[in-house]
Image 1 (cartoon, rainbow, N blue to C red):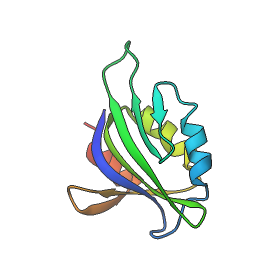
Image 2 (cartoon, rainbow, N blue to C red; image 1 turned 180 degrees about the vertical axis):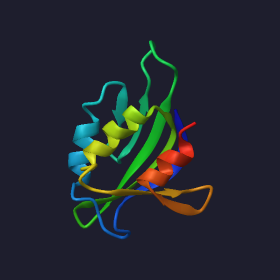
Image 3 (spheres, rainbow, N blue to C red; image 1 turned 90 degrees about the horizontal axis):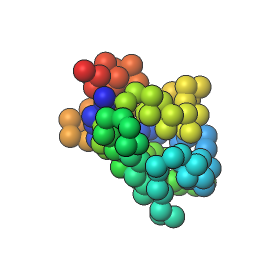
Length: 116
């Protein structure tokens, strides 16, 4: 289970994702147990038959492209993979700006740090 609070950016830094806010919002709306508001805030929770987890997030866009996602909570690696796939991952590399720690990690370092 990964537990974190991070801002997910495209890599290289400063580059937007190659998807729109609307595309990501529509894709997330198809996830089971995920509720997304028109402003881009969302919550996604585990099913009753698995260990409890929940992710809370907010989508941010500018100039027609998704800029980043503020994402916090706990989830299995497979759930994070599914969410990142909506952003174009793994073809689109991502970085995780850790909010509390004040540092930025690439995906490999992020997973190593937050996987028990």
